[in-house]
Length: 245
Ligand code: ZN
Image 1 (spheres, rainbow, N blue to C red):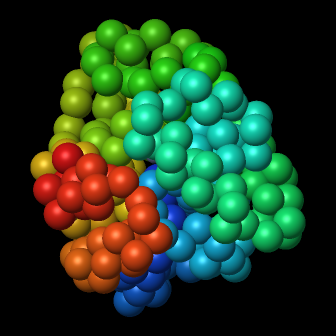
Image 2 (cartoon, helix red, strand yellow; image 1 turned 180 degrees about the horizontal axis):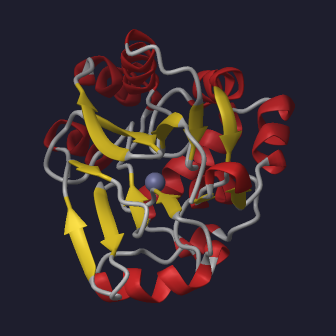
């Protein structure tokens, strides 16, 4: 059980400043004061430094993602596919010492005891292996690796709300549910800067002690794409933004 709270939860910004600004405006419009960030501020997109500055300024707690760790050399780049690797190398050249220090300062998990929240980019079982939680079986295993009521994740860029009933049964929900005191949850808040669930709008979560909701926000995709073209980033990464895949 956690106390009373309300958070906006953002993840996988991937240097997409237009998407990040649109999400922050939506959060401000709803008067949500506290923001949590689940990793991958950089990689893929054209504005890594500006996105780092906004995360620093706006987020109460932030954890590291695989792209953040790759840029600072903590995760080897041969783990990544070709396009991701090109973007990681490009990103490294754009960042100031201060930006790099911020990425180095990120922890890999964050436990918020009073709210009974566990924050991690990929999975609680082995946070630095960057495994995906894609199936109900993956979720079932991972429920054993945190003790808090709610685990918040990103990484796959596909939002979901997974509920574990007291019986052990696991149920998946898509957009919005009321949270029950007797249940535990793994919630993927989706991606701000590169959604992959077929909906190109930016995604984030609004999580309270009694509800979880995935929100979608439209943004100026073509201006992000234009900047990516000017930066010479891979065409595949540019095109996928408008497809949301
Ligand atoms: Zn990501």
